[in-house]
Amino acid sequence: MSTLTTPRTTPPARGNRVRWSIPARWRKSILVTHVVSAGAWIGIDVVSTVLVAIGWLRAGDDRTAVYRALADFFVVPLLLAALAAGVVCLVTGVLLGLATKWGLVRYWWVSVKLALNGIACVMLLLFLGPITELSTGEQPLQDIWFVAFLATTAMVLLSFAMVLSVFKPWGRVRK
Image (spheres, rainbow, N blue to C red):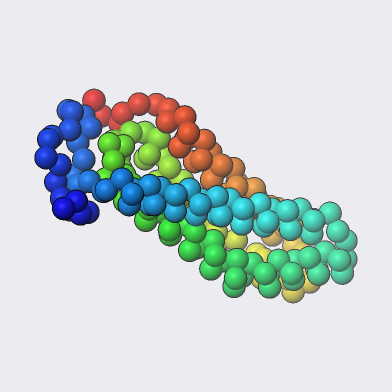
């Protein structure tokens, strides 16, 4: 009898209103998908950051080879994987927000996580241009700094979002 749109038989306590409930098995599956996609996305950022750092420490043709590998590896397969992880993370997060007591904009930590997800998706798209330029063999210093900044910042933002999920700080947005 329990489906995704079945209303609760007893109303939840005030302040914990849920528009619709998800059966426990579905909710846990969505939660696992959310956590795995977030972990995959952080892993992809770690790989990107390490490759940028290795390229930064190399000189001449070695640097170009590292950036070419990063461009070949990142631009198509890793970008698609990162975008898929970001979209899956966003969709599952929205589903969990709508169907649990946490809501989408009911608590500060959830709202901040939602904003960080959007920012990280934009940063991922900004990463593409400089990587393709660096892979041509011309390494303008501002491109290397920009790529290093994007890779490191995205990794820190996503890790911070993971910390927010565990500690759930700051309380409710509106009382």
